[in-house]
Structures are given as C-alpha cells and as structure tokens.
Length: 137
Image 1 (cartoon, rainbow, N blue to C red):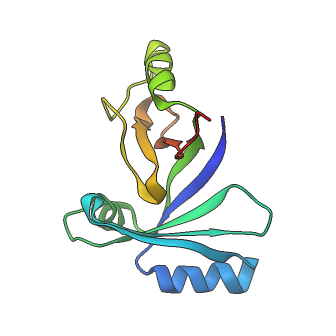
Image 2: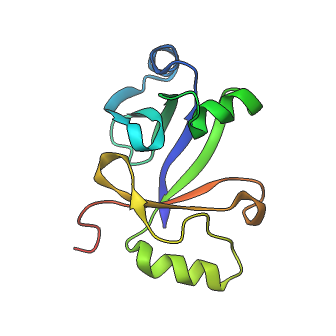
C-alpha cells in the first residue's frame, strides 16, 4: 500500500488552503461536500505527487470533524493508504488483530470506497484505507 493522503481537521478550508498554497506551493485539486459524513473536503497536492493533503472542515455541528475540533482542535486527523481491494485488506488486517471501525466499505469522497482502522490498534493514529474507482483494473 502507498500513502494516499493525510487528513487534517481545520476550521476553515479557505484559510488552510491559503496557508498551504503560499507556504508550500500546494494547489487545490478537488473540492467536495460530503453531507453523509458532515464534512467539506479539499484535496491539495504538489505537481507530480500522488499523495495529497485532505483538509476537512465541518459541515454540520454534530459531525465527526466538528466533534474532533471541539475536543482536540485543528490538526492531524488521519493517515490514508491506497488499497487495491478493500474487501481483501479488511479481513487480512482484522486477522492481524487490528480493530476495524467499519464492518464494510463505505462511500468516500472522490468516488472512493473507504474503511477506518481503530486508533487504539494503530499507535493512536486513525488510519483510513481508500480504494479508488477502477483500482482492480
């Protein structure tokens, strides 16, 4: 697996995107509202790089990112890794004793399918597996 993106919880995508653009030269490659997750996202990257930065802004007061910001403040939310097949990876990882938050893949941004691994088994880090459309081909 390879690093797909690093998720960062922010209060304002606009402010954070401006920082990453001015300071590091990253450009917004994709924006999306994901009402089912209570979040707005923006993916930023550098030219030629596959790994992205995902900015996560709360779209609902009771959503997971709003709760995260209230309890921890802005900062690193999760690490995401690209998986060729989530269906293959989930039982393999569970067989290693790692707790899965999700029992089945769920829709993610950018038409992906995702699942999360519990931080208690990942050194305190929330880990996301991401399967992109046509990953099997």
